[in-house]
Image (tube, rainbow, N blue to C red):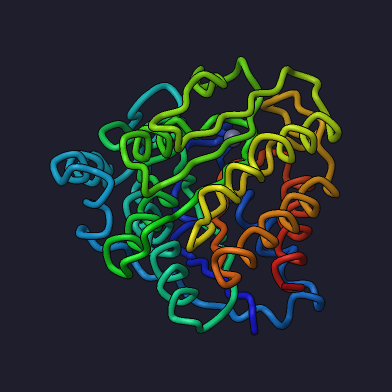
Length: 308
Ligand SMILES: [Zn+2]
């Protein structure tokens, strides 16, 4: 079986301004790393655009319209202090969500075991009715609801190892116990949510870490809190919000993870997928702002997916 890679050139055309950390160079760095010969077996696909019906399982249609209507013909328009649109942002956001939809369809359709979506803008801060934190639509949540409502899956899990809490995914999931969300993140840090006491209907597991926490705290937290909860939930599909900004080189946060930690957690999540979900796992890129650390960490993640 193969690992699928979904991306699209339109994801390079979302431009938040010259000094914005969420830059097209991030995606170029990830794609360049995945051009190395060891990744030649990746089966590469162009991401389709998500349909309005796909987005509307997470976001109210009026909100979707407001976001797409705000996309400028030229120049930049800010939705909030750090979420900025350019002329290419609408198409990029539709491709980013569409990548996860297509990957979910392919993995459930047994075309591959697993998939990685190399896309931007990221999605995990996007709440159902609020774009924020560099995110327009919640790509991973759109994929989760596609799996449940189109494919009839009864239990879908998202694990989010981005250094920031995925407030948007939590907001989309916290009143629906067919969905499960677990996050490791630095705390306190943007966006301010993600305390361990936030548990939804018992389907939310937040594992916050103090600044300067490193590999051992991370692995203990995942092993004690997240893996047993996933085994209890028994997901039929494992989705991953794969942000790489907990790496020690990242400029936006102060967790001290290393590339080997991304290898480790990917192996653990594949084991869960193998036990409960027939191996089905779809990962999508979230943050990661040191270009070199982002590229090598994403490569480490995909290397494990290909070994499944
Ligand atoms: Zn992040």
